[in-house]
Length: 457
Ligand SMILES: [Zn+2]
Ligand SMILES: [Zn+2]
Image (cartoon, rainbow, N blue to C red; front, side, top):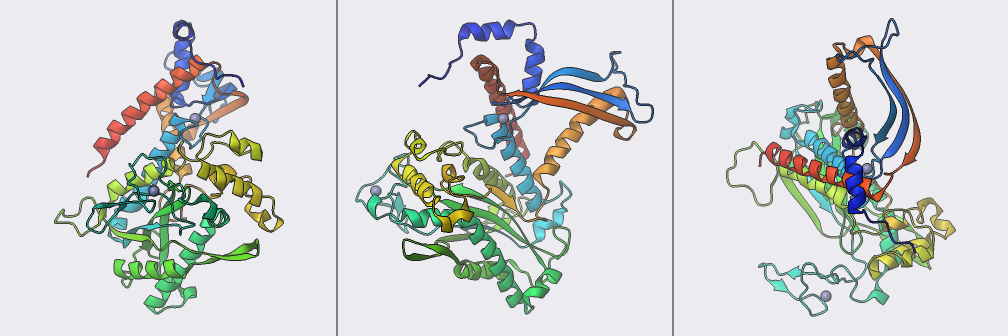
C-alpha cells in the first residue's frame, strides 16, 4: 500500500513564493479553505441587461474574468473537510436559532412565546454495554462488568458480551430510525388533537407541529434524536398558536406518542421485531435568552445555548469517530477500517443483511458505512424556519451585491453570465492542501470568536 504523501517544507516554501500565489490563495479563501475543492475552468461576466455590453470595473477593466475557480466540496463530515463541515455547522446554528428566537431569516420574534420543548429520544438496548454510571445522588457506581471506566476508556459503548448482543436488531432499528420519527410525529398530532377535543383531520386547520431535529451517534454506535419541537398556528411560525396549546399539553402528548410509537421490522431468522424508542426520554422547556433570569426551573435551557448544541450535534454526528467516511465497497473493506470491533460487527451485519431480498428497500449496503443510519443528520419540518438553500442563497447574493456596489449598478439592471466546466477535484499537491487547511483553521478560529460575541448567554 502506498503511503500518503506528506507535505515537504521545501515545496511548501516554493508554493508560497510562486508568482501565482496570491491569486491561488484568494481562490482557496473563497472556498473557506476547502480540503477537496472542485476545480472549474471558464469565465463569468457582468453585462448590462438591455444593451448586453460588458460593464466596466472602477479600475477600468471589463467586469469579466476567465480562468480558474474553486468551488467548495460541501462535504459535511469533519474528517473529510473541516472547512465545509464548519460552514454546515454555522448554517445549522442559524437555521435552528431562527426557528427558536425568530427576528431573522423571515421568522418573527413571536416564535419565542410559543410552546417550545427540547426533546431527546433514544434507542432501546440491544445488549448491555460498558458505561459510566452514576447513582441518583451523583456518585459513580461500577459498570456491569464490575470496573469503573474512565470517560475516554475505549471500552465504553462496547458490548459486555458481544456474542449475546443483538446486532440484527441494532441494524434494523437504526435503518428504521427515520420511519420511527415519522410515526412519532403522526402520533404526536393525534394526541394533541385528542387533547384539544378536535379530530386528527381538523388538526391542520388549528395548529401546526414544527420541529428541527439532529441525529447524534452514541458510543454504542446507535443514534439519539435531539429535537426542538414547537407548536404553531396552522400557517406556521408567523401564525398565532391556539390557546389550548400549552407547553404542558405538548409535554403530555410527547410522552404519549413516545410510548405509542412502534414499527414492525421484517421477519429475520424466524424472529419478528417490534421497533420502539428506548425508555429514556428527556423533555426540557426552552427559555428565551432574554427572559428574566430568576432562578430557573430545573432543566430549562436557553434558546441560544441550545442552538449551539444542535449545531455541534449536526456535525459531531458526522465526525471522525463513527464508522467510515465513504460507502463500503466489499465485506473485506470493513476489516481494513480503523474502527472498533463493535462498529465493525455492526457494519458486517448491515452488509450481510443487505443481501436479503426482504430488506431490499432499506439499501443497507449503501448505508453500511453509516452503521445503517439512512437519514439526514439535521432535518426539519417545512415551516420550522429558513432553509439551508436560503442561507446559501443569502451568502451568494451578498457577495454579488458587494461586486455590484463596486460597479455602481443594481442587480435588476444587469445579467451575470457564468460559464464554467469542471476540470478536477482536490488540490494539486499535499502542500497546497496543507495551506488550505491552515486557511480553514484560521477561519474557524475567527468564526468561533464571532460566535462567542454573538451568543448572549
Ligand atoms: Zn470542502
Ligand atoms: Zn464495563
